[in-house]
Image (cartoon, rainbow, N blue to C red; front, side):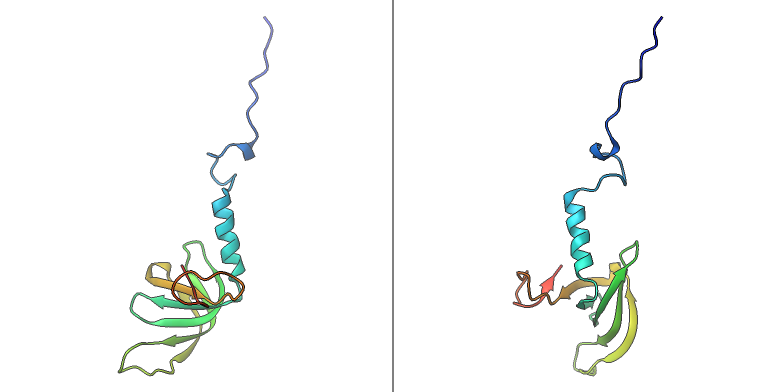
Amino acid sequence: MALSSPPSSPPLSDTPSSPGISVSNKQVSALDKVQALLQQLLRITAIDGRIFVGTFAGTDKPLNIILINAEEYRMGPEHDADGRYVGQVMLPWKYVVKVEAHLPDQKPYGSSESIYMW
């Protein structure tokens, strides 16, 4: 009785269903877009109407956004239009309504010629 070799399995990179092993082109391009925003000035609108303007420093695993050198603006007649300096701020993704960045070398999305929204 001869022993047969086990059937060969495809390499891990060829199996699209392997979690964490292969990354689709869509995920890579999204990651590249986020990395391109590092050190860029972002304007983030929160669910309560506050607007934060600061330098994008990164995110964590649950996608909380970290801004440095940030300023906070509250909209409305009873609020100061100058805003206030808050320094470093972490904004939970579930409270973010809109993220905008000024990227002059890319085609705009939205209504403004210089502001890009996601």
